Image (cartoon, rainbow, N blue to C red):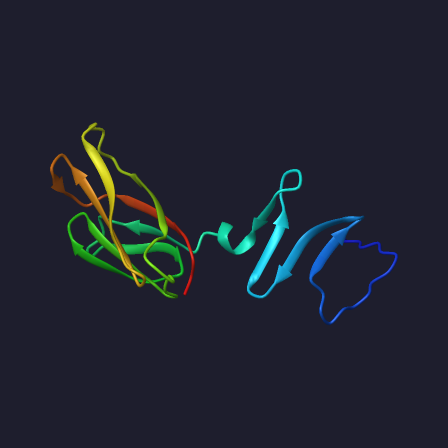
Length: 147
């Protein structure tokens, strides 16, 4: 059972902060919300969130999404060449992609590249040596500004 113990709850039609004790922990303004981090540092909640991620089954025919967030579909361009399409576009093409792979290949000469990025999609390519090849699992996440 959950229990909430309060002295007073006061509603405010224009509330801009949440305060615990005497410390403001969340502040809001038009299209922005910050939360108190370490010490007195403030962190933008919107900027700090992952805006999209994809778990791609690269060896499926065609490649498919195992699971995703803000990814509407996946284009299997060629072997080892995958283009996830955003459900909600990014505001520009300056976002960041973190990507990794899981494969049964034990050779050292394999790599995954983040190639093209557009506001509506991005491209991942998996290589074994100099050739593109399908990968068991390709994982990617996007941070940046939504449109």
